[in-house]
Length: 152
Image (cartoon, rainbow, N blue to C red):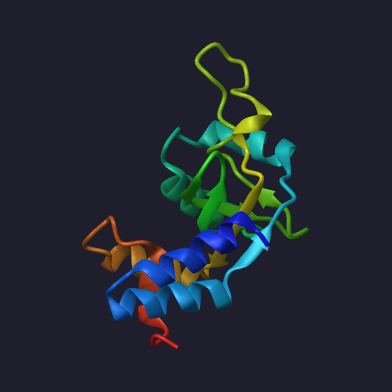
């Protein structure tokens, strides 16, 4: 089983807030696992990205390029990390944030890409509404999306 799926399963078991537990169970049922990274496209788009700003980077690029879908969830690095990434029309991961060059002009390394990605596509029209209405910038967009669609 995927490390990220195990991680989200663990989150739903250890949370004592019933609403958060329901959210994590919904996330696990709804999210998709992605493995194939288009490193070339990620590197090309990294020129528009800022390090440690994956959520902003990916939302801006999703609006700029119609064939890219915004996804929010997790990336498996050394540990699972909350992360935003994109999916292209070939269902490949595009991760401009983890493809950013270092200050020396060299790529920080292919090992910066995650071994797997797990997340939920947030439709662009709804993403815009959620970002505008998100008073607490620390609330994950998938949680707001879950609330927006009626906590199924």
